[in-house]
Length: 451
Image (cartoon, rainbow, N blue to C red):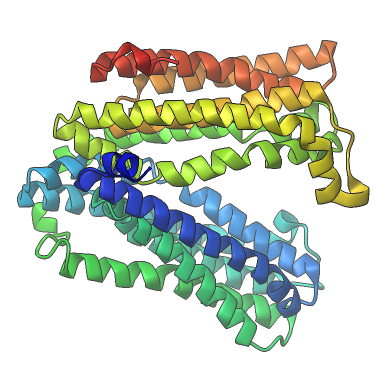
């Protein structure tokens, strides 16, 4: 066992991946604990759950908006790795300066739009909250701070992608944990005065706790890891900006299409079948997606490590991890199938008197879906790592169209919500097959790379 571990962790890239993966599991475990603790603390702080619901809705909108960075962060991430490997200080500084300039421009535009749009929107109607609970004036105040948070975070979170390029993804997880812990501590210590004052105060707290850690880590990185390579207008290069935008644009499109593929099931089930069936879907999904969530934690540091190995022409290292992860995906499938006979017992214990009757059609479908989800994430990580995204773009785009057609027309004939999950499998499996073949060709992998 020890000899196998030594073979797995045999060089610097291996050590970095293992360290970042272990750190991700530890930090994410702590984050999960904080998440469980935070809910009762927020409920105590907001005596009215409708007001708390508005706050959570505002946060969900903020997170959604933040995903629209046009893929610039991921574009920078891939380009920066090559410059770091070549120790090209000027290229590093040019890439960083160009990315900061583009996202700085987006941030300014966002701030201007927010300044004009916030006061003219009827936020009470938007959030479906009575003016007696929260006045338009109060929500407008909160939304001004939300837009300020977005503006700063758009600009400051470039450091997240720089840390990925520096093979320090563990620091990103730590920043997120610090933000969550600081928010919980502050809310725990704050006195609950009134709904209006509480939500105003929390909007200010959120702005500070989100952006201050990003600011501190940015200063730290440019004083230590990237000393003398801080962004400067002198190093702004329009061509580099266009290159980052071009590569980032493909990342961005794929991100939208992937979200449309995997993030619309509840919406489709609610609209095509019944809102009540979404609960059944969530029961199966939360059980069978657990392995995928754990796998994603392990894959987080892999992306930049793959980019680094690809730039160094170390295809042997990439292939070793590729084959290992593909074999692990088979193990995941076996575990998913193993769960099925015990699923009714698991759900009975978990949900108690609210338990549902297990369907073996649903169980088998979800075991295949969960395994396909893991396999797709592995293949996408390697494709993104080497910057070959066109195949992914084609399959995701066509997949969205095919999924919607299957969901709409087949549910007219057979009104079962599992059809939508089966549609996911049908559109993701062809991508997995062709992406694996394409990666084999590009990396010169052995035949054993294809499952």
